[in-house]
Amino acid sequence: MYGAALAEVYDQCYEGRGRDYAAEVDTVLELVRRHGGEVRSLLDVACGTGAHLRRFARRCPHVEGLELSPDMLTVARGALPDVALHEGDMRTFRLPRRFDVVTCLFSSIGHMADVSELTAAVRSMAHHLTPGGTLVVEPWWFPEAFLPGYVAADVVETGERRICRVSHSTRDGHASRVEVHYVVADPAGIRSFVDIQYITLFTRAEYEHAFREAGCEVTHVEGGLCGRGLFIARRD
Image (cartoon, rainbow, N blue to C red; front, side, top):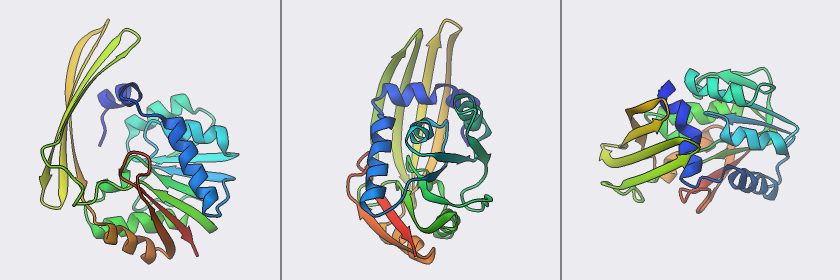
């Protein structure tokens, strides 16, 4: 689970690396409408610090968020004081209302450990759709597209803070192991920490099976937001 040290610099780091959350939100909503969906209400699952949700809130009459990490939720609540943000697990959550759109972006679905957890998460998200609602899920890399040994490095400058992020990815069975080292320097001093994530390399067929098990018709959109594609599913 994400810690407070990462939550503090998360948005600065990824925006500094070129992540355009507003453009990604525009892409998602355009795809929803293109597939015949409404966007009157939206739930963002694994909303993190609320970077996408803040932009969704400007375009949708009603939005809510769900996040497992208390540290990420603390940041999100500071940025979205008037939005309902729920602490919960995507595999098991139950909220009192349903939504026209449910999103799960930034490959958060890849944190499911196996196919049974993947199926449970998709089923829980689909349960919160209105009839005819749209589920948008950004997958992690498919096994054949993953690059073992991939290295990335960035230095982000924001105000008086400098963030150095270096990552190394390897394959560990059916999962990718992504080890990320951060060094953060600002007027308070220099600190460092390591974040290690295991993200499952589900196949496209495994994703599509999970959607069908949840009663959804699914389409895979190549490219998507970051090259990993998007699944667009409609609930029967």
